[in-house]
Length: 470
Image (cartoon, rainbow, N blue to C red):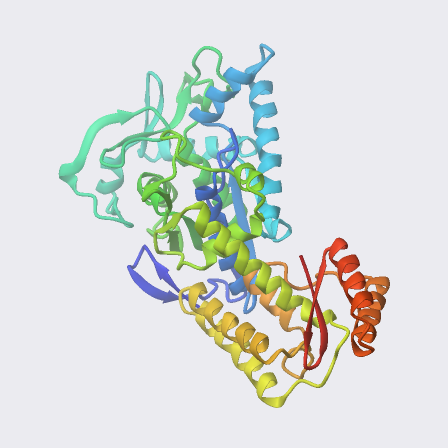
């Protein structure tokens, strides 16, 4: 597989550093609220990438939960009922962490193939890294915490600005206290933040200083990725908004103590899902969640299909009309997948069987070429259209054995394993067909209505009746 690498600005081949397992780290959610669908599009990209790579290599995929930062602390203060800040934080993040995992399953992401790591479970690793950075001269203690020195990092011979160009002139000597900051600013950033009143805190002593407090945002991912995957690992994913400052700061922290400047071989970033041509943002209040999708009566898997219909590096625009169109396409694919259960079965024509084989190999080739999901889906739709036009209900040939499972493995649309209708419903379809043959049209209409009441439509084809779900 080949993938665009933000680090090299080239499309690079994906090869496991250890020759066996591709190790992927994905920046995960900040669990203080529902994830909006713009965030979820990033996780759909990461899941699809893992699926495609897993068809060739073993994969270890790790995603973090940011369960301590400015946002989670602020929200835990607002919702907390007790006087224990740590307990309030844990209750909040446990609640929204569980909701996130439910959302991940709803959009077709395979959470069983991932390892999730919480920041609060890696505090000791963060403190050890901060201590090592301080001892080596890359970090310094201030009144309000511990900061990373960009100047010292540069003096060591390493480049700050591996993912994008950052010049000496744009670097200020000022320090940044908040976890997220203006992307136009380049400052020393907090590795550890001294406790403020009412905040959750962990004991930490450094160079004779008592620094009870909590970690900064960036150090969390450096510690968690190394702890779970080692360093360097193969692929780091995230949205393009994480390139700077988050991923740039991760690289600096992670490589300051090593001879190699490489934290991960490939940095892969997905584009934004816009609304009204603007980035979705909770600060702008221009976002939707899966709850909003459900209220519209739409399937969360339609969001997955919407995301896959655009290239992951492109900027896609969201409207309810576009999501409805994706839902219509999803239902079409589901009806096509249900053809495997049709009562009318016949041998598949050789040309159709060959088209199946060509489609499967073509989709894999497209996905291996920088995850070109739109082109891969176009090949699938071509096959579906062909089968619809010739009204062949069977999908039983030498090239179709396990084909739906393969398509599901690549796209995660849950087309394989869809349940068959009941034997009683099949019998009603048979009775209706016999009634039509005997020109008993009243009986045929009665049976048609009964099937519709059970959620089934039946169309008559040259090969016999074919049902679909309403």
